Figure 1 (tube, rainbow, N blue to C red):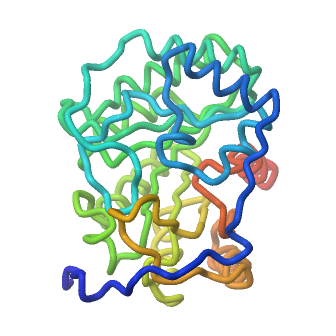
Figure 2 (spheres, rainbow, N blue to C red):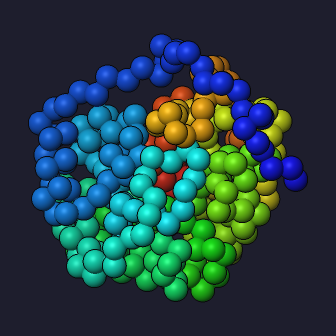
Figure 3 (cartoon, one colour):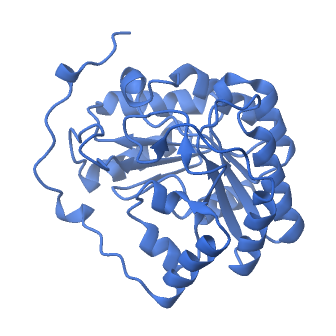
Length: 298
């Protein structure tokens, strides 16, 4: 597979279409969530990744908690999270996350992390401790664990699965051809393998991709087929948006009709649910996605 070069990437588009313009409404609930996570010395992917939905989600009283710090050991071409040498793990963080979930009265919590490749388990033990703390302090709350690939270490995946999150998520992020450009320190096949292993351990499995990076429709459909083959249940598809001029440029703004078409194709291929839209991100309306698949199981 040929590695993409700068010559393969088109110049950035001049302006965003109307369907990508978001106005963040800062209500009292929005400020309460923001103040809470800061007061507990927590990080949210909502802020670190400059998510366009943070206004909507925070106004609903929800947030996606970013554990193990805000410094990542990888340097993906799309991500706005800082890259560098992370600080040591904060062993009190799992309890503080559980307390935040309790204070917010969450019925569904999404826990994700930076990549911590310098740790022997990739941070799997910290993930497990956080999941267990949330369940112990908030027995009514469901947990979605959005994990890194742990460099393919099966034992690390098992540690997280043994903590029994209600959903095990790991994002492919892009199509196979663009993987070495978008995620240079990851491997497409390795991420697929992780999702398949999680399914075999009894997990509800979820993944997500971005579009608008130069992929073709056939390549997106091939990703969906690959996910069905490994037993993936849920898929999110959203528009890539360049966070800074230093990141990969947007090649194309995908029309809403195409996102709707992807939803239909994914369901026809065998995915239980596809959340597809320009502003969709991995944890967007995650509680509703999980509820849909549980209702179908019944």
